[in-house]
Length: 237
Ligand code: SF4
Ligand code: F3S
Ligand code: FES
Image (cartoon, rainbow, N blue to C red):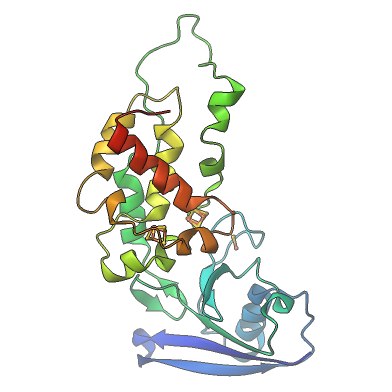
């Protein structure tokens, strides 16, 4: 099949100071080709200056989230046949500054992530000196939020984040959730205090865009709601 691929372009260092779109006609595309394959074809055969992030090409590294026909997706997981159209538009994710073409500045996103202390905190040494045991039920409590690959598809699809880039965003909350509900961690209260400030969880208006955007099918809005509930009730369960 033939595909018309319209790609957002911006490259101030090379004189493209105004955002614009370039369109490439790609012939012989297979319906099972991924959008990442189309971008690689453009880069290899049409315009080597096209810039985008990607690494694993298998939905694991989280580096190639972009807006594809208006929806946040991973370019390496979205198939041409999923889009039901011969016209495909690819743009950078929203709410973060565009550096070049499809590449955005991820620093504010990772600053928010770091602000919730996304790592295990436990100063006690187990008596037997071995690992900290946990029941299967305790592990299941936060199993869903361990799946995050930090692609930013959720945060950059959130209307609250679009209007206020100080909002910590659903990805940071998901990664706080992963430790708040881990029985081996000792810093849940500290994280809940961080998320209870004016840029925290209560800025969420339950729009659900984050859940729809997540390529790992994490129940993002539910995780946000559970963190809100823990703050309101003072109970972590
Ligand atoms: Fe990406 Fe999902 Fe993690 Fe958000 S919660 S950063 S959409 S993997
Ligand atoms: Fe935003 Fe998700 Fe809440 S899209 S408003 S964080 S439910
Ligand atoms: Fe790694 Fe797509 S390239 S998730």
